[in-house]
Length: 122
Image (cartoon, rainbow, N blue to C red; front, side, top):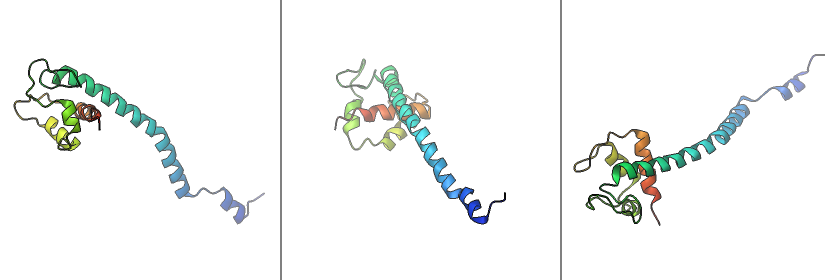
């Protein structure tokens, strides 16, 4: 039995509705993944800070640097509005002496920035 034009419209899919539905599904799937990624970046940043930065910087509240105290403490940097995420990224991407160039990957830079900013107690 052939469908009339009215019933054919009922079964046709609206491309805009399909696009919206696909976007919602993608968001619901990817949102938890991005939160998990951010948490792992933070942990990676903590590990990197302890391993590479702790000889010059205080990398956590109450943890003194092992060789010098000349470099700014990470908790102070986190609370200072002058140390924006952009500034930290720029510094880590192209450090200037006396800070050594660790040739960090983007993931490592983002992880360190996330860790430093997580120390803001405000």
